[in-house]
Image 1 (cartoon, rainbow, N blue to C red):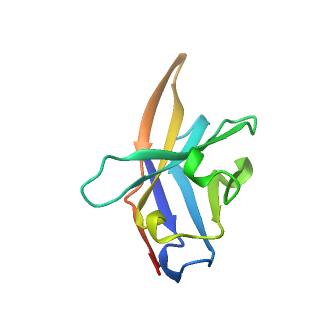
Image 2: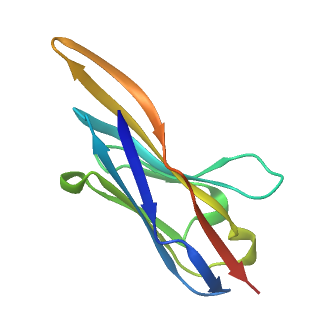
Length: 123
């Protein structure tokens, strides 16, 4: 089993910055892609940014140039630096990880989610 623990959310004024962190722990052989998603009230959960184990990144159009995703593989942690925040960025942000487990000679992958952290941007 794997736990993803997020931190760094909060209330910030428009134009401000926040940095989210998500640390993975548990029975992990390797972590493949990691990402951040968000869900605003009454809306579906959507991808904000993703990063592969090799460091390749992708971003939602709405956050390009403002958000930066990074990861520290040694710490099994992914970060989301959010700058120039806008009220429409207000949402619960969820961390996601695609994890490979090893059981003897068997390898299998599973997908995990964090508990979510609230980000509120006031105008």
